Structure formats: C-alpha cells, structure tokens
Image 1: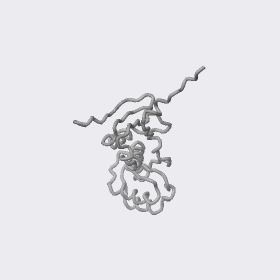
Image 2: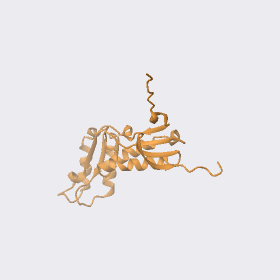
Image 3: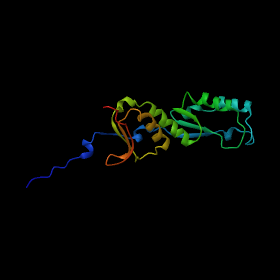
Image 4: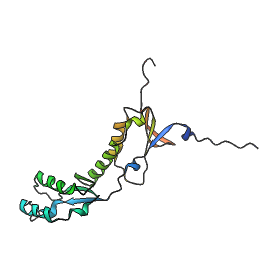
Length: 174
C-alpha cells in the first residue's frame, strides 16, 4: 500500500503573507476632551487654561496614545491644541488631533512607513484579511499604495483564498 504524499501548494506557491495585525501598537488609547477646560461649556479662557496646564499631572499619559478632541460646539483657538501637544509630547507615545479612529490610522501609518517596500520587490504578496485586532481600512489602502510599485502581484485575503488586486504588467519585448 503506497502512502499518498500530501503537498502543501500554498507553501510551494512562493506567496509572501503580510499581516497588518503585526503592526498594531499595543499601547493604551485615550481621548483628551477639551470640553472639560471650557468655561460654562462655551469658551476657553486662556489664563485658566494655562494654569491648568501647569498643575495637571501629565505623567498619567506616559506611553499612551492620545487623541485630542473638543466634543462641544465651541470656538477653540488653534494654539490651544498646540499647547496640549507641547505638554503631552514628552510623555505620550503619540498625540493626534482627532478621534479614536484617526488615532488608530496614525498608529498604523507610522508602522507601515517603517516597512521597507524593497523587501517585497517582485514578490507575490497576500495582505492578510482576518485579524484579532481592529485594522482600519486606511491601513489596507496605505500598504497597497506603498507596495504596488514594487510587487509582482498584490492580493487580499488568505493564501488559500485570495482576491487579486494588482499584477505587474509584463514588460514589452521581454
């Protein structure tokens, strides 16, 4: 009785799997809402705000990813956000103006920008589709933008079931 040899065609295919989940920053995400600094929920008083900046414990943001927003419909001068960034920057891992989704996008952009596209030159790349952590759609768009110029093919999904996205055209006369 002859044993049937099981061949892993996915392993032999030469596909390179890129899992964006591996680029998820594990640090805590927090939202700093300026509404708590507004006088009567309407305006920001500079003197009071500057006093708050001096006395607030900024160390509580050490290593955290901070999104800065103002959830009230108030006129907040641009310098207010800049002053917050000045005080958060020495402690926080990153600071963004915007909501949690914009914070997540920035974290993934930073991680994706550290990827060397040359490592994928002429490769057949599958960008993994399923993950245990939330990967924003913006991250998939960004990795596509960065890899398309160098890869042979770009696909989405799992190596056993992919959606083709891009295939480098064959060179003329080659």
